[in-house]
Length: 196
Image (tube, rainbow, N blue to C red; front, side):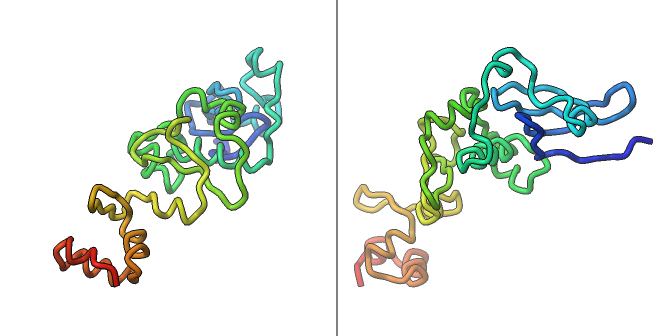
């Protein structure tokens, strides 16, 4: 009986292993792998492990190397792909599991980097609208503080035609977050919005 090996999430040359998909004639598991050029290809375990397959093999891939391996942009790109396509990832349900996908253009890392630009230090890839996909018009580099303001579980409050999350309203009113949260839950909104 062939030894069961789980390669999901591993890198082999230009390939990132996404998910198990079928077996070869010897009963070894085959994997769907994403190539840096954006092509998904099905590869047997042994071909990955012995280095026989390092890319999708298409001519466009053979002719160019993306040159982004081990860069901050590459790790952000890889994380984005995995969140949307790797069903074994603990965070998958918050991304691919609820229908968030990576646009076809961004399956190519060179296009992703061209659209996003260099990753600033201490920043992360952030979707502007958390219910929309990873694509050029919905993504930006954000500081951890900015990204924390953009979580799905944030409470956004609209007052006088201005919308901000609860934390930002608390800061603007010179109140503690817990104090303003209490106001928001128990007081009429007009009263809750009176600055300290």
